[in-house]
Image (cartoon, rainbow, N blue to C red; front, side, top):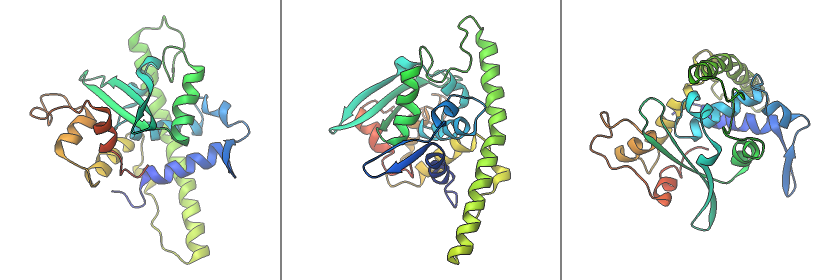
Length: 236
């Protein structure tokens, strides 16, 4: 796993950007909700980066095509989760994600479902636009978001340097030149492999690999509790 874990520092950075914690709860920072809905904002870019990680290493095109009806609230062991079921675009293999309800899912899932119709994170709102054009727009947005994500990790490095100087620490910096949106996918896989619950079968199921690759002889996880348990010890 990375040192420091990219997903974890991005998660802390994201929360600082969009919310204010207070005794007994939290609220959005002024203007944060509006910025979350701007596809050119740093808030949206970091949220998208984290979604790629949280949604089992999904690609930008898969998040851009995620439909509202694919996200359903469920209960597992008396806890509230979001069941998110979709398909890998290239292989059409089913992806099953179970996210426990927390601050991130309230912001990144529930908030958008309250405003969205059709697609959860619509990149193009015109329903008449062809699929190829939509996918090109998603790809271009992901490419442009790379710069915003690097800028965010540059600011994270500034905080690490400041903290090191003030507290006589030697925490390593993030190698920002290597960070792109797809880094989140690799982070998910590497963190899962290093988690206590890791199995080859679990990785194949979570990544929804095509049947002609690593999942050829592995059963797919379909039970909600099994899916939720597989990622219980992930960093975020």
